[in-house]
Amino acid sequence: MTLWQAVIKRSLDLLLALLGLLLLGWLLLLCWLIASIETRSNGMFAQQRIGRFGRPFRVYKIKTMFDASSERSSITAQCQQAITRSGRLFRRLKLDELPQLWNVLWGQMSFVGPRPDVPGYADCLKGEERLILQLRPGITGPASIKYCNEEALLAAASDAKAFNDGVIWPDKVRINLAYYHHYSVWRDLGYLLATLVPSFASRLERRSPPC
Image (tube, rainbow, N blue to C red; front, side, top):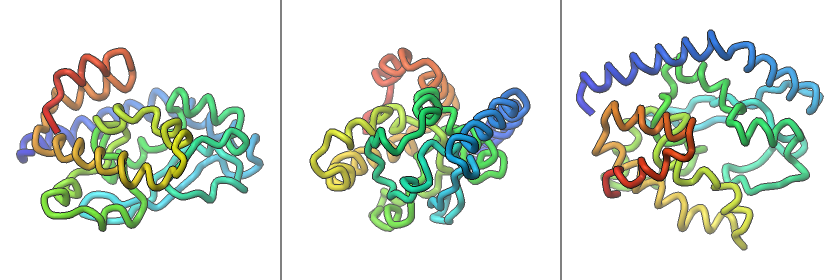
């Protein structure tokens, strides 16, 4: 990514985050209120993740699980008894991600990039793979779009952690490294469109650079 590309990417992040908070701030507050009432606790969920240059930060989401079950690892398989009624809707519409607009505004995240991992996974990156850490984590991205049904895949696996660590995570690393090497603003806009309009994702995938 050139300096000029980095400036454009950050400027778009700031513009979209501000617009998002202005236009959707009411929806974020409504989701937080519903989650707070249903879980009888603070409807905001925070978890430590690893960001750009390997620096830890706290990522924010609307709470979609009851407190007794929200103490979970990053390997999140579907657990229908733990997910709240509103949480199913929030997850399906990606409304639980709305608080991350603040993470984007503060410069901890970007709209498009690798999803931020919990501590431990960044330490497994070797050699050229560590170039991924030069990117801000994203709310969405090529790996997120490909694995939009990740929870279902993990729920179907006999060993969710082994399947994640041996299959999904290495594939995400390859995809994110390709994103690093072939970055363009137009592709970022395509990934945002594919996130909002899932039917566009298959068309975008055909045009994506090889991993």
